[in-house]
Length: 134
Image (cartoon, rainbow, N blue to C red; front, side, top):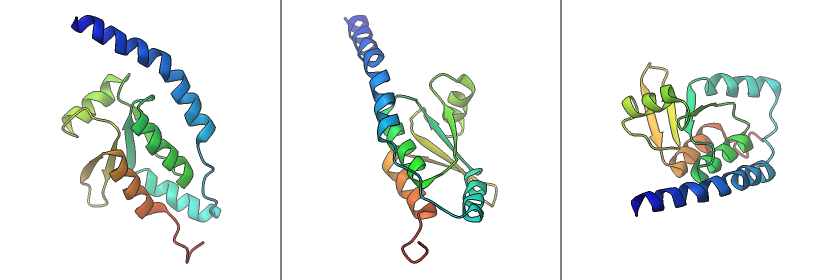
């Protein structure tokens, strides 16, 4: 019975994945427009970040769409198909759970931020333009 249930959900995921990825492409917002110097500063700050994700995870899609809206070039690491990234997530982050944002601080420490809403709040707080700047 367990095998049947597992195969059933794999089949459902196999069917839904292309539709989820297509919906992501069609509904991803345009990036914030910044000056070239501002965008270079943002890109430099993004080099300290990495998103561990699964391609068809709805919560990962939510985070990727916000990254696109904010115009962030954050490294995406596929923890579903890449065993190295998966083991990094498990050993350093403590658990295999996506999405997970790896944050390298200026002091050389590494923080692991789980939960899509927490990741989005962090990205907005750090990178979104304030009305005074816009």
